[in-house]
Image (cartoon, rainbow, N blue to C red; front, top):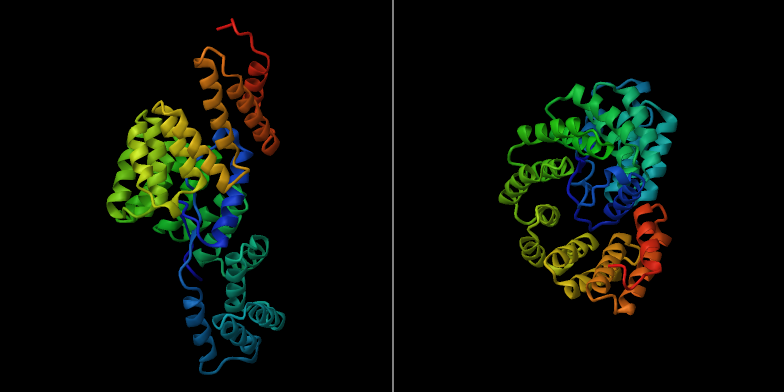
Length: 368
């Protein structure tokens, strides 16, 4: 099976984007544990090395029984098809192999990985659950089951699988890292910190582990400690844009927006996600540069017109401009109300935004 690590978000492939959509929906449903930071896709190296080894070992066995040999030709046909880029033919052959021999682990493993890589997490889960039953002593079966559930936002199910993976292999960095992140979103900060820290202990030279530990510290409001972890991550690998983005958010939380501006301005244009653009707007807003803040929020909305956090922040800048300007700039108030209305159309469950709208819809000019 291929390695699959949850780590700080830097999306490029469609799998990454699909996973981000799952996590965005998850966070929207949990406003009390919303962590608006760069988040967690899968690191996927080349598929099939372990499968190729196990497949060759099975095929070259000196005297396989007829039962053991069932489905092996179809599996090898499927493996070759997948390696050659013929995905549909590979799936057909693997399903045929499993029809002949439902216990053929190599075929089921490859099929599960194919489904997972394509974002078909329900189908992947079905395969990993069967694999866990066939081979309950292989930690990877539980690890990948946890990964698939985590991408679907089923965090408690993911935690259950990761705990079994950790029981079988306590020193696995990836399992502990993912456990930390899942616990973080569930609001279980003590468990989150314990596992995220253990990942850095197991792999002290992993920039990914330190970056995620920093994120968990931030979510626990331990911003100074998080900054130390972000710096450690960037010392190990200064090129991870998502760590820089999360570090910038940390600096804003620590009321150091000008440092955040410098950090975010250094990002190459292609690495400026909607989150990076919105955070840059927040940094400019906190630095009393409202015009530059509005430019960044507009840029974020040009990338994703449904990104309601940028709508809310843009509205806040407009309403502050209106309020500080003796409430003369009526156009700023109207633009703020319009932006809040759009935000509520995208995501209605925002009681604070509704309160803001009610407050500013009918304004007494002399009620300062």
